[in-house]
Structures are given as C-alpha cells and as structure tokens.
Image (cartoon, rainbow, N blue to C red):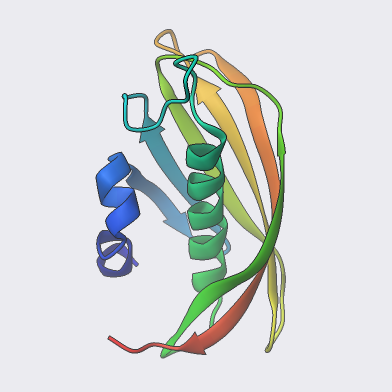
Length: 134
C-alpha cells in the first residue's frame, strides 16, 4: 500500500501523508500550504476532491483481489466548507466490494491547530479493479 501511495506524484506534490490503513478503511492527511489553496486562501475544492478520491481508492485497494489495482470510474462530491490553516483528514471506507465494482465513501474534515474538526466534503465513488502493471 505504501509503495503504491509513494508512486502518486500528485500526493507527493501536495505533501499528503498516508496515516492509517486497515481492511476497508484508509486515512490520509493533507497539510495546509500554498499548494492546496484557492484565491481566497482556503483549501481548494480540487485538493479536497483529490484527497477524497485517493482515500476512497486506497480503501478499495485494501479489498481488491491479489495482483490488482483500482482506478476511479466516477465520484460525486459535496463540498461543505473551505478552511484555512491546519490540515484535512480524509477517511475512505468501502461501502460494497464486488468482483467488478467497488463502491466507497470518503469524509473530509478540517482539523485546526487546536485539534477541532469541521466537515469539508463528502464523496461517493465507484472503483474498477484492473491488473497491477508495476
């Protein structure tokens, strides 16, 4: 899992961290920086979407068959708020794992410097298992 995550150029660029992996659940943290902001200095929706997509995708990977990866076929996201400072915590979880499709959900929350949390985004995603090629 970590090897695959480290191959993610976008996650490296955004300085995201894979924090927790368990069967069906993955947690990724995205620190606040000028790499992830929009014009009003809040976390950009694209950064929220990216970290939600990756958290859901890696949650799906935990239940994918041996020798397979997953790719996103689609996702739907609701943005609930944009914040400055702190970090985003994206928690992906498997809703249903099938042979051809894996459905996941991800919750993105803002964690401020005092550890207080507030909702940022909710995502639902469909993944397709594909052969691992690296």
